[in-house]
Length: 131
Image 1 (cartoon, rainbow, N blue to C red):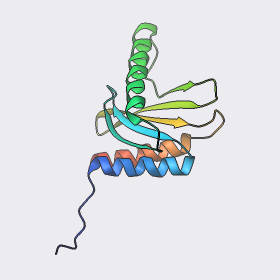
Image 2 (cartoon, rainbow, N blue to C red; image 1 turned 90 degrees about the vertical axis):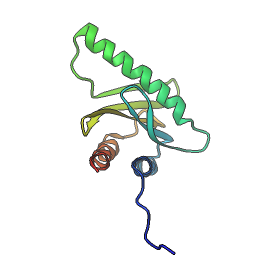
Image 3 (cartoon, rainbow, N blue to C red; image 1 turned 60 degrees about the vertical axis):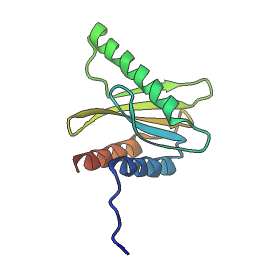
Image 4 (tube, helix red, strand yellow; image 1 turned 180 degrees about the horizontal axis):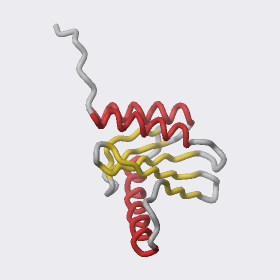
């Protein structure tokens, strides 16, 4: 019997990072996608659908790209959407090992802090992505 542990896959490592961030921040769902919105990893409470969030992220990324091209805006760092119940969807755009990625997090209320937790998650994702 082999007692040596199997290394975690990149996607499972990313999911663990997202799960820890969700726990620390009380976030209901988070997902890492490529620049086209293809989901690479996610973590969600029961009843939440990370695939739906990925589709929204792709639409947001497309909109940000059009705004940059048509309005001459600089590189986008973050996009936030609010609903009428005070929830927020934050999309943080970043690069890891030459790949454009998006960390999307659903935050339960408008006034909740998230930047420190998402910065930490992005640092950890970049570290995993280098392996």
